[in-house]
Amino acid sequence: MASGIVAVGAVSMFFVEMGTGLPLVYVHGNTGSSLWFKLVMDVHGYHTVAPDMPNFGRSSALAGEISIERYAESIAGFMEARGIKNAVVVGHSLGGCVVQTLAVTRPDLVRAMVLVDSGAPNGLVTPKDRHPLIETMRTNRAILEQALKAVVPTLKDEAFFRELVDDAQKMAAPAWIGNAEALSHFDITAKCALYTGPVLVLRGSLDPIITEEMAKATAAAYPNARLRLLDGVGHSVIVENPALFLTLLKEFIAEIGVK
Image 1 (cartoon, rainbow, N blue to C red):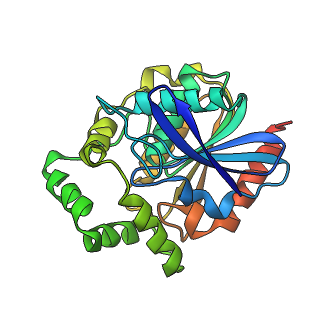
Image 2 (image 1 turned 45 degrees about the horizontal axis):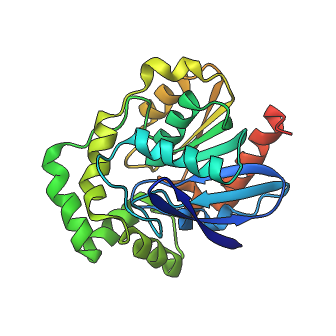
């Protein structure tokens, strides 16, 4: 697996890539990074690319206001810089909201969407009284570990989990509250019908963040979407059961006839 850095406007974006063929782009979630896709990078026939968004992982910080729209712009800029278009784009959690925004604003870049335990088109509200806990997660690794463990309850690889926590701690300080606020104010409900490409929505039955009702609302918002509910999986099938995710991804790609 190769890695590199691309300048997108004023920020530097780290990425990893693997394979050759059709483009497949992975967009991570909050407190995440490209590392979350380490176990699902090898997809036969695809050039798989996973960037760290600005504010995350090994990418530089994003100056000014934090919003889902600006994250989507950074992904669009990254794809243009790498010559990627008409890709299958996978978004996890907050990254799912980023991908949805990308799809309705730059449909030329998105051949199909896969949304993994994604926020709904009308966002995900975090009450302000939870902000102190978020700040504690930023400064207290033990609390952060406890919070992340709750969202990936079936992940048993402790060494890999510690790597995920290491990357979570790299997130820019303003993004901890900023991302929560960005998701709370996010709403593209009125634009969803503009995207008519294929959409696969995945939701784990053990997910403590995204409810089944949210997942159903996401699938219902798009004209050509389908929903798969996954038993015995938490918020992140990509790390909890990567083999299952790859099977579902390959089935979806085959069904929609991506060539």
